[in-house]
Length: 273
Image 1 (cartoon, rainbow, N blue to C red):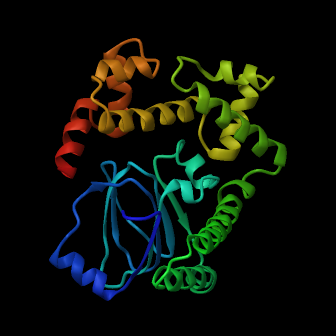
Image 2 (image 1 turned 120 degrees about the vertical axis):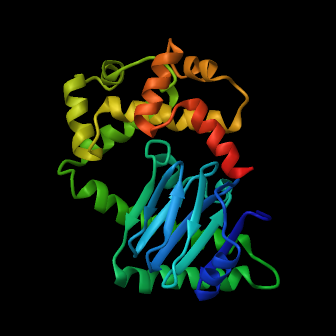
């Protein structure tokens, strides 16, 4: 992508173009928001294909392999941007711990707030001289609104005690610096001055997953990144992520993805070649 930002309105022309020239799975060097207001398009990301139920927003992190296939009713927006344009976004932070980030939205919200912000960004993007500072503020406003609403949907509705969310986010921050080590729930609980049982209870309440599940997911996301972007062997990647044996790393990877690390690397490289 040329430049730090691009926005595209999804219309019937986009669907017709996709039929004539279908987009194969690809990997890009930018973040991407798919804001789907109408239709049921297909989305493929890291071996998983789903039919999106609009209205929904999908966040595709930099480096992910994906493809998007609209149907005849699909409408919405594609917003692409370099991470440095809005580096403080919480979407980037949470994408490290979730395989996919899909947020269901209300129809009223899509037809008012989202469309208004996107229309203004499109107008600015199409101007003769693009003011990226203005686009940055608009994009920050869009992400801030989405993050607030998604937090209500995924966190506030489940967490009665705000301190639980603070503790959970502190756990994620510690995990980001230590996930490559061979450490379990007890290590992180000790860092937070609490028992592993209480940390697991908070994790289940806030995220719906155990601490072990989140650690494994973070390792898996990093493993896929290394398999795609480095020439390291499967054994080297497994060891780097804290797995003493290649066979154990392969078993965990296959359990989570349905394929071995070698199969994942081969199939992804074939898909984007």
